Amino acid sequence: MADARILVVDDDTLLRTIIAERLERHGHRVTVAGSNAEARALLRQAAPDVALLDVKLPDGDSSALLLELTQELDAQCVMMTAHAGVQNAVAALRQGARDFLEKPFSLDRMEVTVAAALEVAELRREVRALRAQSIRDVEVVGGSPLMRQALELVQRLAVANGSTVLIQGEPGTGKAVVARLIHRLSHRAGGPLMRVNCSALPEPLIEAEIFGQERGALGEGLGVKRGLIELSDRGTLFLDEVGALSTRLQGKVLQFIEDHTFRRVGGVRELLVDVRVIAATNRDLEREVRAGSFRADLFYRLRVLPVQLPPLRERAGDIPALLKSFIDQYNREFGRSVRRVAPEALEVLLQYRWPGNVRELRIVAERSVLLADGEVLTRTMLPAELYTAPVPEADASVELGPEGLDIEALERTLLQQALLRAGGNRTTAGRLLGLSRHQIRNRLKKYGEEV
Image (tube, helix red, strand yellow):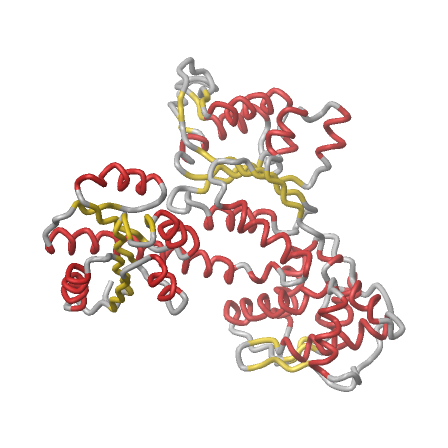
């Protein structure tokens, strides 16, 4: 990791100068300080990738500085201490330090230790970049307040490495997308993500699919089969449509979540794996618990970290971004060049209730791009069942930019139509678009009060 930022904090002027000169030979940017106060002044200018800290400094020990560096700035810290302070250095390791150097130490040893710390810093930087990319990859899920709240929750709970997650929402709201995102943002991202649709197979087959089976358990000639639980070891098991499981299988799933052990179908040996469980359903599990068709203990165990995804009709403000993404995708896939969406077509999409949610919008976009014979996606290319109300004609089409849908043009059109439907009431228009009063006010200011 060339050109890294390294902070050296020691009250021994000669030692910190020698360390700095040695590290600068490798192209690193080194800053030095002789006390906690001097170090904090430097931190206000730039956060280091790696810090070498003396355990004892003139203005006190460096434990508080260590916590600030590791927890707030995500820096890798190496403690430096005389022999008598080794016990303090070990305590610092428990507080988040990566390693320690016992004085006097050789410069070669120091270089190796710093190089190892820089390697970890680089890996952590890559992980942060991948996580940020994961968020960008699923921005198509939506930018409305409701979806932003859901995605912010997803980012927080993803790091809860072992806790179960229950994702609830209507069909087509993106539950599988969110499950993949949780896995990709978690510390288990390097492990497998295995998905099973609990409503797709009859009970004996779904049991074998999840838990595996021993030889001959379900019929002659059938050998040992590893289930998805085993295949998910050190990763994530996604139980889609978990509400479809029988109460007997619900009990087996509950036992597995509780102690991470299970038996294959027909087996007697307890197997232990490290798996995080994410479940999803479009059913009202609370109502099914009251009706006795879903186990209360499993329901409460699953919803340690609940996520509720809103239906598309409650976040109409997301339709332009979703439409842009789908049109871009199908333009590439089918070799088409849709560049404009006629406003009367957009109005149909905004007024429709979307019982199939985002999945249905994707299908409509695919069909429309296939039917398009030019650059304009018109109302006639939409399925007839979407025409739920008369749509006013508009003077011009909404342009697509060189890389896809012109979001600003769509957003302006969306504001105009929402204000029209709300009789000019901004609060009501914001509610229709899933925007707050502050967001509506900002957009009106952006496009001019005349909208």
